[in-house]
Image (cartoon, rainbow, N blue to C red; front, side):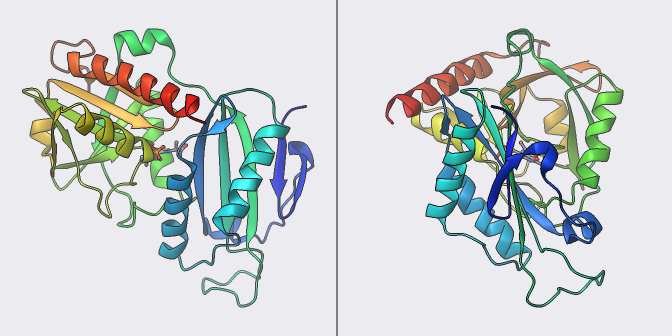
Length: 285
Ligand code: PDD
């Protein structure tokens, strides 16, 4: 039992799943996606992921092929059909198969695809010692709040990090921090946790929301506001967050130490609180 995927109404082994070459996902990158982490076989924050999926679909004017109850059932089925207690569920909807024309086709069925991968969170070593990041100018489009499968910008930016032996590329646009190639970014300065606002320049991260929720509940000093590049470079701590990275400390930026070059006090608190929060949510089920 492994690598069972869902495609347009049926479950099948991954290597049997096929889509036509005229799928608009393939031709235009015309689709949206979600990545939902699964802990102990339970999807984490599924309702929030489905809400963001709806916003992404609205953002590209594509109808939702299912209601939340149907999505929840399908996500449960794909978890059950795949190995591993901790999984990462990828789901994608494209505008379907049609002769190539930029304008939307009429009366075309969306393509719906879902797969499971093992959830790989950062290794203990990285959590304890932090990880390097580089920076780059954010040249992506102005609808970064849509979780679009058109990820060429993100791929090019992420590869810069890989080429430099770093885990992420932190992005600046017009002198302001936006996010990273596949994660959100937080900054700590003088004991205050700073987060860029959720606008069209960043993906509204589900992990970002969890981190802010925990921070406010534990009375961290929090400011959600635009953060300059200079402030970021002068930060005491930098964190990246995502469904697969959870919360990870960035300890060098472009080869220079962030703060004292070690995961900071607030990071260590937040990382522990995040793990407790996950356990608590799973226990409450
Ligand atoms: N990426 N910003 C970008 C550009 C991202 O691609 C992601 C996640 C995030 C964090 O969002 P969340 O906390 O909801 O995972 C922010 C996923 C994991 C991916 O594309 O694989």
